[in-house]
Image (cartoon, rainbow, N blue to C red; front, side, top):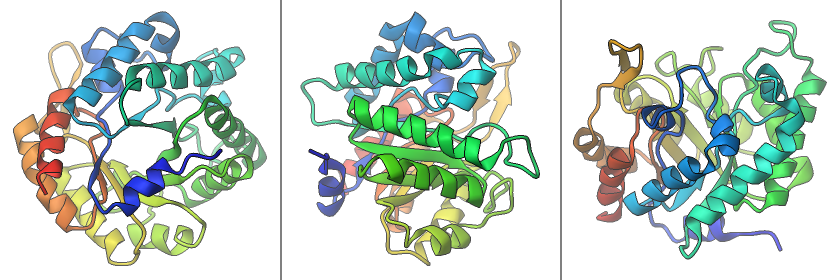
Length: 294
């Protein structure tokens, strides 16, 4: 039976809380810079479970699987393509293990392919479709409650990802773009364009994640809400990073400051809130506290 738990929660009218960052938190816990977080699904599964549990304790209603780079194309870039199926299935198992005994939902994270489609890049559209279709199918088969196609920047790649996922699963899908050029993606896509193109394509919610400053992300949220009635997923970075002496990113918004922003996010139309890069469990705790008192 297809899970409708996510849709039921959305229909309740309550603000839902997603989780925080995966990569930057794993780096803070010892993952080497430049190494994919997916590596720890195999090498340090206990750390993946612990991060999930820390977000659940902080107040998350939804946690994301550690599969952002889990498509076959991304796994090929890490010379791990033979473990694509194992990675996705294991990551879902770890998330469910962390959420056991709670009503926390597990979202299957599907990130971009990391290369542009032809003719601007090297990936054939059909290869992209196969990669997205395969990953969505693996995550759905492993038992996620919803699929999250996130950090998108190109309309055509996002369309391929969505259509591929819909071809193998009837799970709810959230489609989230990253507006890392202020209120445009790196390919120049605006929130209004995303709404115009995808609002009629049977998505459960449209989203904004990663991006630039909290101010830029908030403006993108307002622009998106102005043109769509769909639920909005909002997971901005904890501000802008600088590099410390070791070369590690340090984000400029502290947990209290991020929590203070939540009322603006909800007032601007966000239905699901959380954080992307730099968002620690303590950041998430402040977000959840602010969201749950509304």
